[in-house]
Amino acid sequence: MKIAIIGAGNMGGAIARGLCKGSVVKPEDITVSNPSSGKLDALKAEFPTLNVTHSNTEAAAGADIVMLAVKPWLVEKVILEIRPTEQQTLVSIAAGVTTRELEIYSDNPQQPCFRVIPNTAISLQQSTTLLACNAWAADKQETLLQLFREMGEVFLLPEAKMAAATAMTSCGIAYALKYIQAVMQAGIELGIYPQDGMKMVAQSMKGAAELILKNETHPSVEIDKVCTPGGLTIKGINALEEQGFTTALIKAVKASCR
Image 1 (spheres, rainbow, N blue to C red):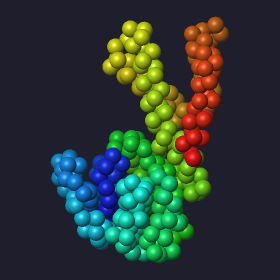
Image 2: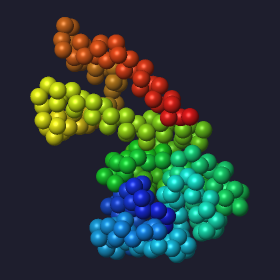
Image 3: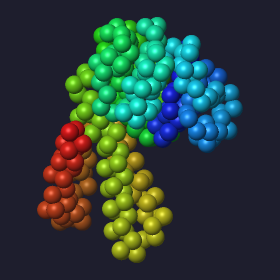
């Protein structure tokens, strides 16, 4: 299986690194294209057998899967340039570009198309990745799931649910980082050195996530365990709610769906 990644920016580069660290596809079967050399040189230094090029058409030629890791407004231009065939699976990482638009840009209503929304943790193989596809790509689902499972958790969704799930996961990683930043600021005010505080809070968040993922429990159950009557945690929880913490997060996720 040969894979082309068009674009070596933050997400394209992260996907290339994640794939190269996995076992499903070999680095020598991956080609990454980018207009400038710097990011390609960095990838090549990390993975010497990875193929790099400045030509999108060269990258796409002979690839079984072509991933478009470009800005949404460049998707049509790139598709017209590379002209994918029905034998190729077209995968778009561009937020908001539908599979129907991919079919139209390809000038082929039977073009196998996927929308894939990872988050930046994919370079560490810790992404939450969302997949949706058109009817012509149904038989390719397991292949895509296998590829991205090596880079974190993968969720196959109806395309209509992609916007909401993107707000919760791809945008959501920024909300989680904002929480870390805010608690660090509180720690600094209370005398904790920034680097120490950052590690403390990040590890606490990692622990909270592991409780949910490994114990298959519910956040409310875990919160109740640490909210002893008259204790410190319940005072902090009540202060958060007094300031509209839950409402603010709900509004943030809903705003990111628009």
